[in-house]
Length: 450
Image (cartoon, rainbow, N blue to C red; front, side, top):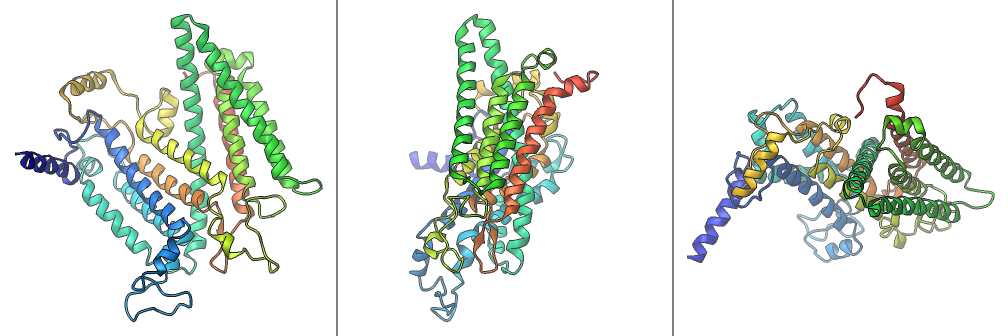
């Protein structure tokens, strides 16, 4: 009897993976909105690609592959057996990351085009968005296998510039999410302080604001110590000084009386979050400066100016890349799990606030213990824009895992000024965007920015 019940449970879960319906009556799905479940599953596909990329960058994977004579060619490019072996270089390092992220970006780009102008779950394409997960996985696997057959040629260089543009845009999306998170955080804690009439909430806001500014000041000091030298590294000094000045300016603007009158919820907490994130982007940019005197992350070079091979396998796992990967994961989950509390951000991110009748339906659904379709009247997020964000996320994580290095002529990755300028310009664009959110109600008084 237990085996029969287990088989029935597995068949029920399989219907969730293979069916075209959004798993409304499926027992294996939690009491969650269907739109949230779909976004989480698509995000899990992206994270699966990230996991594969990390494995292919891990030290020791290459040596293990060469122990399998039926898999790889040897290092002299001579097949170890007559049939089957491939160049394991295409399965490892940045070449594997580029191909894996190309596959995920192509997968989400296909769905971005397919889901244009889907208005509600009554559209037949909505069933594809919210179901058929097993077949979607097969499609992703097929694209991935095909991507590893792409010849090197000019592919790495061309795809590098695609990654630069996509990552630049995703950095701006990350900044929008941080601004929105800080606004929501500040607004909720102020409401709690007024409701409870307790100074503890104000003390909490002050503590985190002070902590974020303290971390930003420490980051500036450490960048001057490790990424600059007396009489050299002038570009790094200019970047650090400019971004520090810009952050001080936006912090002052955030507490100006006129800005406070137009936006009572604006304050130093949001400015401190943006300042800390700007310092991180600046640190990440300086870690790509192609000058060993100004960049302690660069591998040691020998007399011919080439990277030592023993340092090449560990060049990916530096601190900026690890922190960037953590921020990427948090922001991607943020995109998948929630909509903003602010109408302007929802309009920009193509999401909608949950209406009252939907909340009531959700309460009934939770009591019944099943997932439900909350998009019969209209979608709660733009399917197409969500996939576009995942395309940008695929490109951004590709650049993060390869530390923004550019493919060189010798199939090695080299640091370039291109990545430095892209990150610095992204930080400036983000600061300008935050400044605009502060002064826009003053410059456009006839528009509603509430």
